[in-house]
Image (cartoon, rainbow, N blue to C red; front, side, top):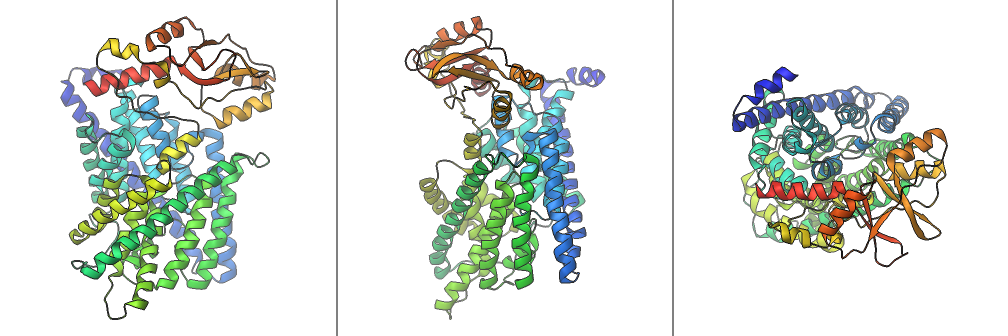
Length: 571
């Protein structure tokens, strides 16, 4: 590929950036379209086909394929790429900020195949999370092929993510705002142009191969009247509570499932698959609906068209909520956009039916209530209000929805922020031991160096006190860090490096222990940098008091990342 790099190097920088972004948009959009079509084909060939068989055949074959798909996905994730588990959006966000946009190339194929196997065979998960992650990874890989070093791949990762989400839902505007709100964290980012261009190209790929129709067909919504505006806040509030309930339940189960030491990680998604299968067949046999399985877009479309009774909608929201909690909480490979949109729509339809019991002479627009519920639940979970408005609007193409959606966003954010610490993705990162902070450091070098080191350090310190290979293996499996303080008899005794721990596990021996360089949290960054340069592990351990427990850790990587972020923001 050297000839390609040489050719690109001769072009003006702006031209090179535009060409690169176009390539990322086409590649990521095309891969996402292929992913979408593959999931649909697999679902129709399995669950969709089995639903037309007799009851016994449906029960047997749906169980075999759904649980088998979850097992195959779990094996792929645990054997080849643990970073591809779950939604993938938090992992991409971590790569964007902590690794300057560098994502391991194997994420692309593992996420692509595992997502098809699990979502396509019926697990209650979405396709947008995998689309964002493998598209971001593809953009990062293309950056490398074009000659960009590992520390300058943020544009590729962000552009790929935007193209992937735009293609997944045919929503380019929402894709742009989501990447800026959630991954980059800055609506005024200098990457806006590249993200916007890639999102447009990604949506064009969907237009070309699937069509320009919106993701969900919705009959024309009339201008909401006084009754509708009185009901919108109620629906928005209840749908927000449903979203918060999902977030808390899924995170709690995810945390608990990691402690199932007797069940190998490869088998855990199958547990979620069994629960999803049980709930799905129960609802199908009682109501004739397949919405609990897979994406659930068929029943969601019926809900928007007013073809579901409020009783069935209530059953679907309860069953889908539980099925998604177990599918995601046990380590499945899939996103949460589609399920949360489903929860919200069914909540809106169910409430509209209840309102109709008390307002028999009032025409209640079921489609409007379903849309309000979708936006509220998604906004509550993702924590991106602008995205929650735009994505629902773009998926339906209904201008009359904009005012109710704006009211919904205000209510959703007001309630959800009081009931949860952070949005779903940030809580996932906290659970994984990450502390992703976007620094806005002072512009002058003297003020920058005068900052206390505690501003840049990682406060969630994971210490090792047992050098047994089994314990070390468990620690490495739970945490992604490269340096671990070693504590013996309650006192800091050294620092362990990840590569040494892995070698020790392989050989069944104790790892090398390096001398720890420690300091107080109020030391200046200038002083910390001097200590880090001298330290052979590149890690600085913070202690509030001498001989006390570690309260923070700072690595050279942390300092470089913060300085790179400062430079990026200043350009």
